Length: 344
Image 1 (cartoon, rainbow, N blue to C red):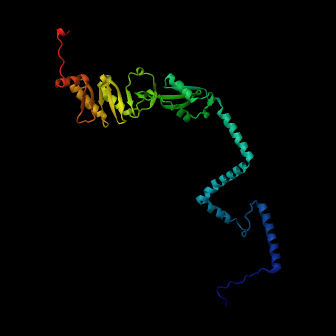
Image 2 (cartoon, rainbow, N blue to C red; image 1 turned 90 degrees about the vertical axis):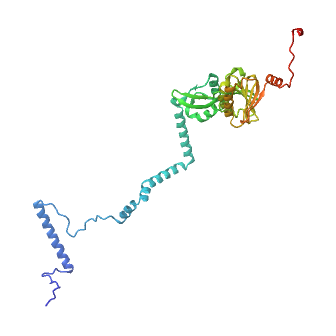
Image 3 (cartoon, rainbow, N blue to C red; image 1 turned 45 degrees about the vertical axis):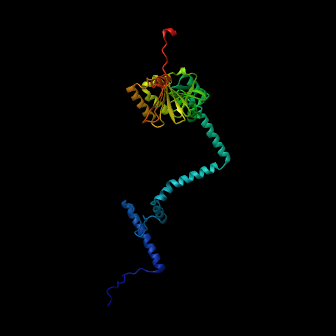
């Protein structure tokens, strides 16, 4: 009795060894020839290879797999796409520039192209226009800039020219620009004279900030401007203008301001009247004096000076005639005897 898990032997076992190989080859050749003849007669397309043939494996190879994994890394992807081309270009440029002769040739070509481009007619500047300045100041600006025309706009240093123009005392600000038509336009902002400073070098016009504008030959040339005198008067020009603005009704009588000890101001009026202003808050002291003058007509009296340095107690200094009359009124000076007709 045979066991159940044992397969029965084949009915016809194929011969083994060399004989079996020969028999199998002959049988395959005969069957292949017969199958080919049958397919040719019927017109049937040939089928795929034999059932035991090896098919293509769709899975990537080992190196393809490694490359795909690396391309999924952001750093490697950036380096592969941009780093390698940049490195290649750098290497080529380095090899080209390694030779001193090639560097000299490249620099010469660059300079030649640069000069040809800058020398084109559309970049040529041939005229200088000065706006916002008086004729004399415009001539002074042209002389100070010293630009030789024609010149390429690339050769003009506008910042340096602006600084050179602003070195003139009468110019507060300057703007330079190259306009169409080859025109170098200079727009000038002049300083406005506000005061006359009588200093060691004579009369000088000052603006509101105390900056020098120009020299003045005579006081009669600018009678509309007040005069300031004294040490440090030019540096305190802003405060002097505040006092001039606060003077108001006294402007017609104002002759000038004197800087005392580089600390405070004395305001000089006609008839040699002098107002001694305090060091602190001089404008407020002047306003109080104007209010007192409006009530008592103080400035219309014979006073030589009014000392306002002590705001709680102003001091009045009488004029010569007023002082003489006061002394006579007190009996300090005897009255002159009246002349009679016999004395004539």
